[in-house]
Length: 341
Image (cartoon, rainbow, N blue to C red; front, side, top):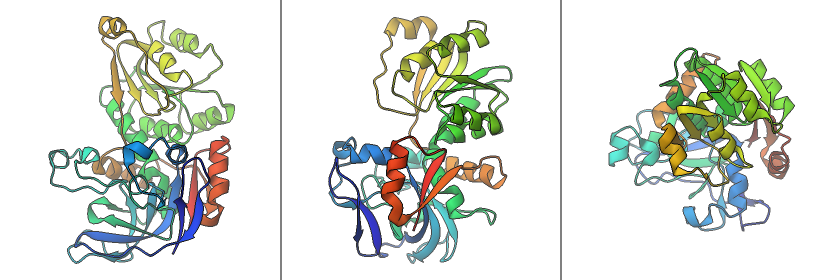
């Protein structure tokens, strides 16, 4: 089958012919890939940022945001059947460890991460497990939702944490309205009555944010922290969700936070430098966010089926993988880039 692989760090991906995955275990599922999201994490993989953490052996196929049709199943699989439309939770989990038993399967002690530490979905077929498959509503197609498997799930996971403590009249600031942020905007408006302020340096991203539900948009022009403080009477926001995590956004995010507020870190790339006295004197909370649970993905698919979360995409054929990577790297993609095998 055709697959797009990492053959070395700091070099371009390569299209190669590789063997199709086979069923070897009773809970294995092989999916015919209908769409694979192109994520900024894929850029970080090529930069070598994940090399030590993942321990993956090169070459391997990347792509961790996947949806498609069930192609083959192991003899113990009962939740999906051949032909079913599915979106895949990005992790293959064991179901038996403490984290899985608690429903916190994103922290499974025995997980595999297709596209990160094992073969992913920039290919015609992908091996996953029954536990990873979420059946899609008849109204949804793989290309409509593939990037929700990670980008959407990550956004929903962070927003769900914030929505659980936000009250009507509270203010939530989102930093970044791009691939993750535009999903986060929709999730928050579906899950909370808080006032949503979106900050981005790109006017086109802010225009999209306005169209999909942002109450206020602020251009990140150097005065945006003061603008947010002015909007909140000088107190700051109850929640800040940072989808950028670099370029100074972490310092700015903390400055936009009110006393006892919550700063949800989603994007990454720089260190957070906050004096400990500032943390304890204001009792702010810094909360990390890693993908999301299987039930988070189920919830997100309900919102998608209800039309409350729609993915804005730029679609590319599988053989156009380099163009998709280049466009994402250059900031030319509004929403999410999708590869279609």
